Length: 259
Image (cartoon, one colour):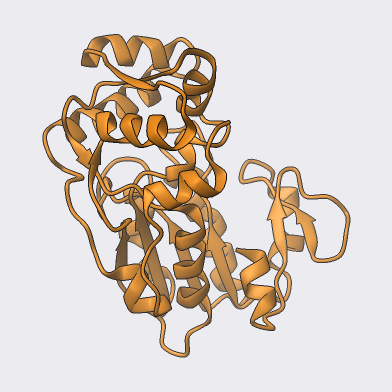
């Protein structure tokens, strides 16, 4: 997203735990108050990526956002999830609080990322190593979205003259089951990929082996919601804000898929 902002001539500062000391970067850690001032200095708009692996991000995010408002930030754009509305678990609590903190705001609620199957996500690793995708989603469908399309929407939400002042559900152009995803991967890459269904309990326990049990349960709950049809929808958000249609999953795999 920083590249897209820079291409529009917008001064941008990248702030993160692994930020280097190069131009336009600064170290920021939600859990380190000593990093807040440098990240907020001179900023009037912020893009918020919640801390990972916690089911209660509001505990650490809301105090920082109050500090940001006091420091002169007037617009905040939050990366949320299509599966979690305002007032819902995890980042939904931050979503609910955002309109009271900033006059200009937006909450991006993207569907599940296409990059989960082609990057360094657990799905991508099992695809490359075992030729399988393991989920508890059953035959439920998801309108997977390319991260580049999310970044394009975020760029507009941050820079357009009029802030959205709403939540924006961001999807790809079609809803696919994980069996459909496996079929596309097989066709495009020439490597056989299959969907291996798990029970809710099996998925929860697999996830809990590498992360806190409460967080693992929340992730398993999201997959159960997919199985029940919660993500079987598409929106026009990408086209409406950027003027171009979202990238399809097949086009994404053809461009960046596992080889």
